[in-house]
Image 1: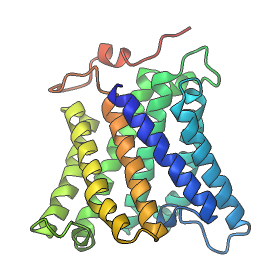
Image 2 (image 1 turned 90 degrees about the horizontal axis):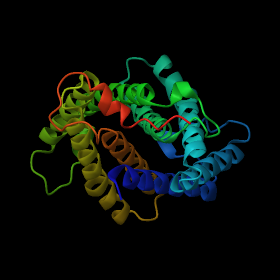
Image 3 (image 1 turned 45 degrees about the vertical axis):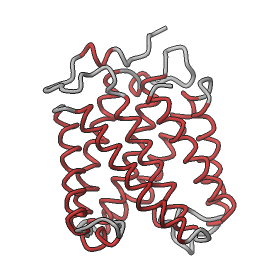
Image 4 (image 1 turned 120 degrees about the vertical axis):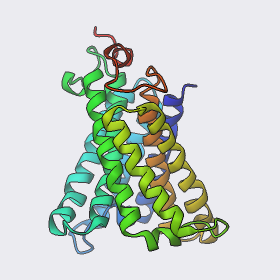
Length: 274
């Protein structure tokens, strides 16, 4: 199984689990889906939202349904971004936590876009040429790259809170908070500028995976009955998988590539036109 397929499987399964959690709890994904408590029909909307994630995730698992599922999940995460996170940025533009939350969802949109752009063919339905092919993959990568510095800046601005999440067996937690923040920013700049983009995306994926295992994993084990811990684990997992999907899109690009990615490398990722 290629890494892009493995990333897609984890991405899909995390969405299925997150969706089922929302359906059974009749609630949204905690702070990641900040829907007003007094919204009319909130519980019903939460069930619908969870169902979309679960069904969309299942669709991503099957090659025959991956194209429409990727498009649906791209639209879903984009609505999630525009309806729930962008307004918070507009209301409180000086609060980095709003920008960081927005950036996390951008990584999901970007991953869904990469999946659609790299698998959709002209004979597929639905097919939108502007969202498919090499140029679309490049745009999705740029969106992903622009999100990373905002996540990194959140680590720096809220260094004390980030340090509190560092495993106790690691020394100098504040140092890790600053180091990870700088690493996010560096990875985003490297991908955006096409300076060792494959290496940067891969290291970013490994770092996100480490967070998932060593931060959220122990939290779930310590508080297995708390939905917040499970939601955090699943969100971290889906962001990790999203990063792997973006990293895998560089499989035709040399590890030590500098400058703009070669046209032929991008072209090898584009599906043939029918």
